Image 1 (cartoon, rainbow over the protein chains, first blue to last red):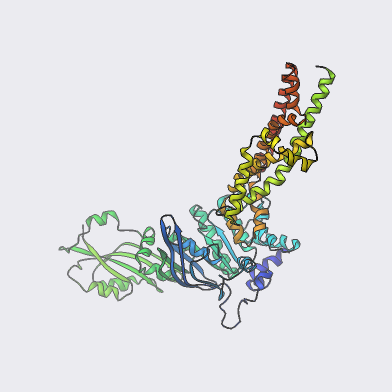
Image 2 (cartoon, helix red, strand yellow):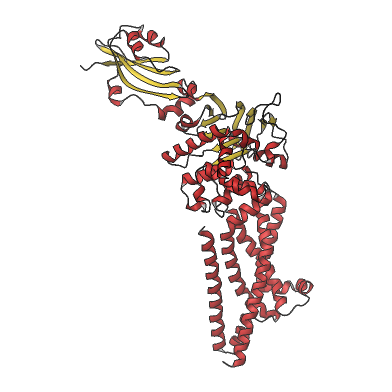
Length: 382
Length: 217
């Protein structure tokens, strides 16, 4: 039994093929002509306006976006940017004011209660505060989606075991949620969301209530689930570190509008919108204080030019080429280069000795790739 | 105290327990659906029905506004219709239930309202229908509060049942008034008070234990 269940998880095709009746609905998975692959979410001119005593608030303003099947799609923005509203529109916990949401190419607005219940069984969801039922054991919590779907009792047991094994909580099956740690509770939430074998998993600030270490373990679990089961994951967060850690694509929302979207390495490497830069700020180190104190706006005899190079590319920055381009001694003041999705992304601060009189140095360095800014001059102290 | 008096007290204690027990049962059966309706039909509920919600709310308030001794008399025609008589234990059970039901409904309503809306949202997200939300989320999550509310209801019903003597239903309160007060029998009065205190303590501690067990999960 254990072996069989394990194989089921290992093999996405079987996991999918053995899905609940809800999964086998006519909205076929692949192969059918003109249909997107299972797990595709599309927003068309989606808008949501809240009316309150204080007046109208546009939470979402004509969002057009496609989330590709199998992506880990991060939605980031400040509080009130509309990320939660956008996420909830996917399973109609939130009804849009105008525009459409399409899952696998089929619009969801017209679904009746039965259709909506069937849709929600294809879309799992986890929450910031876990939202586990305190009166039920871990096993009963995870089993609930199957119980209410009318899955035969004999089938429920093995599937709950399988889901608990997936999140590494087999040993806690008979425990009540109040006895679990935050990370364990979120794992139960994930098991509950996955037990119906959904094609999409929505994560509503799923790591915001967790400590950094637990956050990393939950994110790595999500990546693992995405890779092994091929589930599309849509997550919202206000922390760029979560996006960097887990996501393949990112959407930056600002006041209900799309500020920027694309693969994470590109958005991180060359942020174009001020909202993106503001969100990236905590991740990027500023100018060191001692250096900032010595930085002068104008060149002085014997001063070195300080350049900030914002780099993103397939290849890691070539330091010897940098030295050759500078045509002068180069000191590395500060650098942070990371690998994101096979791309080197990051920033460097370099001081080029006595380049004050050489206006061409920026252009030559720029030719090596990256965005180059001359941020000032420092007197060399030795 | 004579043997006769002791027998009378036993009978009275039994009558009180019987009246309160049956009425509490009816109050739960009628009050819980009322409370559920008030919660799910209210603003932000899973089945909003503002007009019906206000109407039921007003009805509940109306019954709660009438003092029990007045209700006892005012309901006499209704009692005759339901119980077939206007005197005796069954004649007291009707007004006791009618008075306890809205009381319990309001207390249960508060507990049901305190269920985290996030849990209802989670239930919706996994494909629960409304009835599933009632059975799997609202009732089990509110159960400790509901049991605590039932304890309060039963204790206040033991108090109200003292007035059942007005319709000849007997009970401990009736004995205290007729023998203790009208015949100046201080021993009977004191005994009844002691029994009532013991009864209330018993109910309260049983309720508290149940709530503690439920919350310990």
